[in-house]
Length: 300
Ligand SMILES: [Ca+2]
Image (cartoon, rainbow, N blue to C red; front, side, top):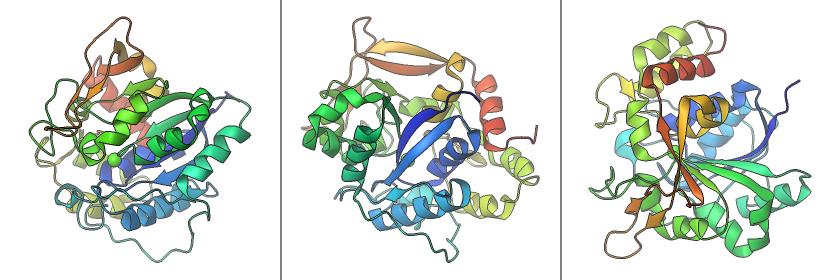
């Protein structure tokens, strides 16, 4: 069996988080050690419930931990619906969060691992920043952080100048980029290039058993950036960059975040000597095809 990538997930589901989580859990490529919730698209209570439910149905047995409070999270309900999963209402379910908080569980997972662990982060970096602040020595146990966050050129979606995840906790992003870890950025513009058609996803879902769940999710989701009938695959790029690195250019870059007059404004300037990477999509159609296969294995 192919070596599985040891992984910690940090996520704020979120419709596009749900799709990215499905890719992670269904791919077989990852040894998921832990999944943590963070406030972002919706409040911490809701992202924790959504993450618990999605992990129960697709990643049964993986511990789920509640993240740290982030006062700025929970403000994107106009895109993702009041509960975070579009128009989908969670059915009653019985799984509970692990008793440890996210930061403690991340630290214990890293120190218990005999190889370095990769992170996929799909929301604000609140938990990861706290981990690196409380346990700076943990940085050398992290392989890379694949993060959906930031824009490359100071443009934004939640404001004119800030991408949503960076805007929700700019101080956390600043801590992470100064912590000595390698971050692979899946910036905002990738989500728009990698948009997927809802009809095409529903046609594939027909052959899986989650068609009605996806129908309800999409019915309550709307992102002006990609328009009617499409889902912007922001978060999925942090996953497909690990599953299909050949579909991306990994552009070496620096990272800057504004903490003052334009909080959350980011720049990822290309720099051969930079310690980070910025993803660029080589062929949007090839990527869309790969994402559909990863979402609905066996339906092509
Ligand atoms: Ca997200």
